[in-house]
Amino acid sequence: MTVPVSPAAKSDHRWLALIVLCLGELMIVLDTTIVNVALPSIQTDLHFTQTSLAWVVNAYMLTFGGFLLLGGRLGDLYGHRRLFLLGIGCFTLASLACGLAHNQETLIWARAFQGLAAAVVSAVALSLIMDLFSEPADRAKAVGVYGFVCAGGGSLGALLGGVLTSTLSWHWIFLVNLPIGAVVIALSLRLLSKTLNQHPSRDLDVAGALTVTASLMLAVYAIVNGNEMGWGSLRTLAQLVVAVGLLLAFLVIETRVKTPLMPLRLFRLRNLAIANIVGVLWAVAMFAWFFLSALYMQLVLGYTPFEVGLAFLPANLIMALFSLGISAKLVMRFGIRLPLAVGLALATLGLLLFAQAPVAGHFLRDVLPGMVLLGLGAGIAFNPLLLAAMNDVAPSESGLASGMVNTAFMMGGALGLAALASLAAARTEQHLAAGGPALSALNDGYQIAFLVGAVFCALGAGLAAIMMRDKTGEDPDSVEA
Image (cartoon, rainbow, N blue to C red; front, side, top):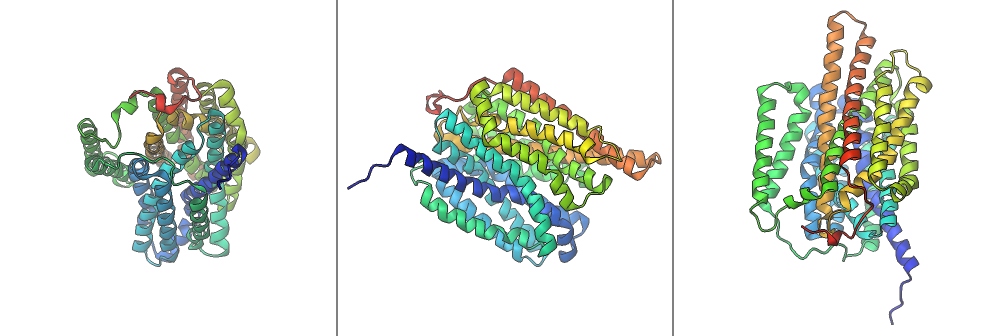
């Protein structure tokens, strides 16, 4: 005898599954910030040089950025649940290898494997959420919870990294993932249905996968090494040219294969295309702001790493508050376009305030107001941006859409961080060469970077306001190719 399941029980099941998916994503978000605090300890323990130490971060970024698109498409073809479990399992094993590493090579290779697994998890986690929640109101709330995890995880990573490194050792910033990974796998097997997103075709566009993954990895490699090798160096320019050539080859391949990795017709979906462009512009500003504001507080204001983590709490708490419910209500009340544009406009104002922060800055006067505006902006804008990217596509292509918007964020963030950090360093060197005080030179470099970041964020706000189609969702299966 089969016992019928009430709608309420099904709803509870979906929300429990959402918590598990967000816990898996939390592992990925934590790992993007938890490592930064421990880098000095890792450098001392494993005898990294300043140049080679960057690869502890770059190896992760390289595979993360390179495999997002492929990871999302593999989820569409072979099942989001299967790829999520595989990604979490591989990420947990890679975290174990990182935690047990006692030489530079092991740590760097384990970080690269960690980034690959993280790309798979990030690409399919959002797709699983879209699979679970088809109603616009529930979908907006679920994406809001996902946004809360992404927002709060960064601040938690900075705090947790400081605590674990100072009380235990840097190894524990990776080993802390082991119990989380085990719990996520166990609960996913129980709560995520095997029937989620069963795609009828298993044909993989191998040529397209190879060319786009190689293009993205080479582009990220050129970007993260641009400051060291020189942005105008022959090596950097050659790498970027080859990356563009591989991307063009990928586009040609996609027009000719029977089952393309990324159907080019998706770019005719206005909201998806605009969301990716806005995502790049926003990520240029936000990644650079997070990195450079931490340096401003440490090197100019003299904060400790733990104090820097505390300083980010207001912004992250505001992001979390809006992501958990307020942003979803704004989307249901005003649609996608207005909240996205207003959120990015507030973030622009926050960056402009940071661009005015002085050498003898005070937290309440010179840091907190910008943090509040950036927290408000990100909290309001994150939900509608993800919904804009995902609402127009069919469930069978939601993994690809998720991979596209995540790739846009990753590439924009990597490029923005490298370019604006380079700009800040060049401005600082210019002031030092002119005989200016060291702190003033540092601060002036950060100010010009924040100002340029504000310009990119403002462009994103304007594009969203003018070009985004104002909608909160249709039946994705009704979208014509």
